[in-house]
Image (tube, rainbow, N blue to C red; front, side, top):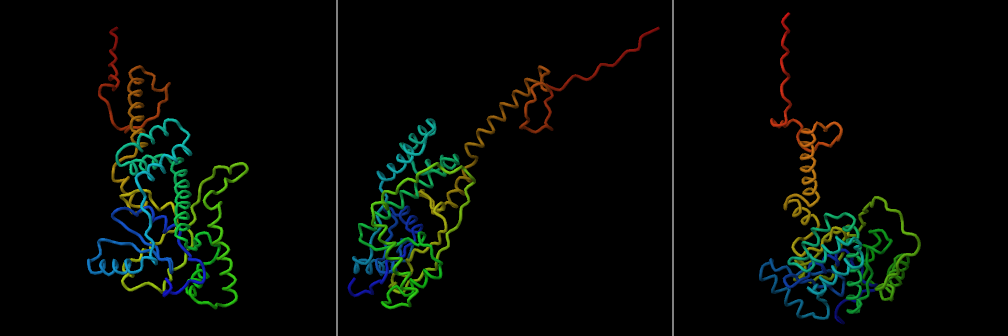
Length: 325
């Protein structure tokens, strides 16, 4: 580290990108964080052997520069899901169903599939998962003694953040930029406070439930000047504007892929329940027709009204006979 350029400000890291890397890090996928500029390295085993060998040599020759992201263990995964159920789910039937899923095979996938059929629970899960992921990432960065700020927490224009990155290693910068540097350093201290790991709940009356509008976060361009040539092909630089697009799934890369999977598996549970309800109404309509009560019951129609049931069709009118005088 002594032979490498020293950053003059804390590293400006992307929280959403780190959340994504933490979620995907497992026995087959490894991610490293660079301590010099803060870029992420993804050890993609699908790359050719020659480039993988060069990357391996670079990582092993600079063990103090690259920090391996921790993998989410089975125990941590189960604890995370159980924590959500016990803290955020209040309906008894829903809670029992989720606890059964957590104890089953492919728990993560089934857990998500069930939540995506429960809009209220899904929104609570997204918030819970983001809060816990943020705390886990801060704990790890603190354990690595990395001075940092999250770009998503900065109320700065992307162009200003890009200037900070361009001059990351310059001791002297213009006065305006130096003032922003001081703000960045002060913000970095807040991540090392007790409140960063134990955020205080907001006091007062909870806000009224309104339609949630998701606003995309404006992010700056990636600016890295100290990336070794052997690492460039392995840079992990996905553009993630919203944390909701980061999936907890271990099989699908993002929420779009997971939603496509749900559409491909057939109808949702809600659609199945609607069909069962439609069949019940159809049976009631047939029964009411036989009893001549259809008009009185005024039952809704879920089927095709053009379809005719010959058994239920009314008999043809009888012909009137003329009386003989």
